[in-house]
Length: 80
Image 1 (cartoon, rainbow, N blue to C red):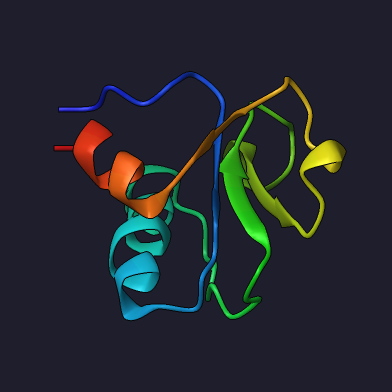
Image 2 (cartoon, rainbow, N blue to C red):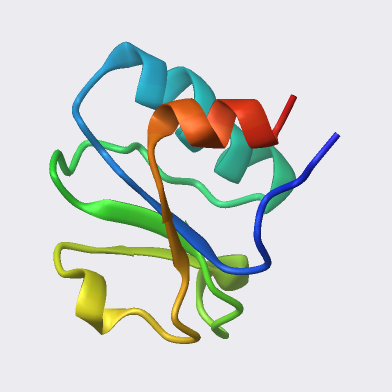
């Protein structure tokens, strides 16, 4: 099930949990080849034309379409 907002971002806290959930989701669902190595950056889906609607930035204000900020826990809950 996927109850994620249309546009969302999650901050990379450098954890294995982030890698195993958010990065895996982006790789599988959006065929985005992210390594998730940029700690403290936000990884996201916002409908842009680059990287199958995914990307990452260090500043929340750089995102298009005003995405919802999610914690890793919220992301996991919404993708159950």
